[in-house]
Length: 177
Image: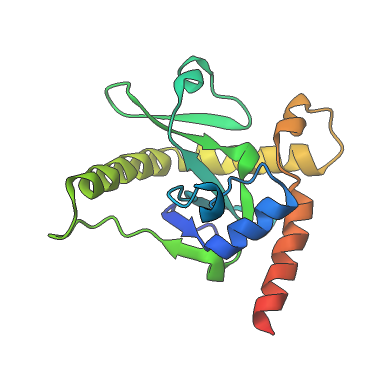
């Protein structure tokens, strides 16, 4: 499987709900608990011949003090402003049918809020593309640390990638029927 150029994607809401039911560390997007405004956005990397979406998150206060590590990166603009974070520990297996490419092209119907969000996404994506080799390497290293015998202490913060891969396969088989 060939690594494609990094782009931003949303994920099918039913698939996210399904994964959240398997592991509650997968961010909920459920309208029933007031999380319908949350969008599961990320970049797709290839790990172990599978597509994985590494989620982008808005930075919170604790991220300012955190240093990059095996399961976390800061997205910083050219002025040193923290734009977002990459949570490798929360990456999820995805198939093409679950990916919805985000359109970042502005149009006349965009509200000021939409324009701001699209520009933020463009800035984050530009950073990710400039650092794509690092991102792809980190995702693959973390995947190996968490799926092979290792004494990596950060494993506890990571999703169970193999279990989610099985669930991804099962979900896709159901959709085919």
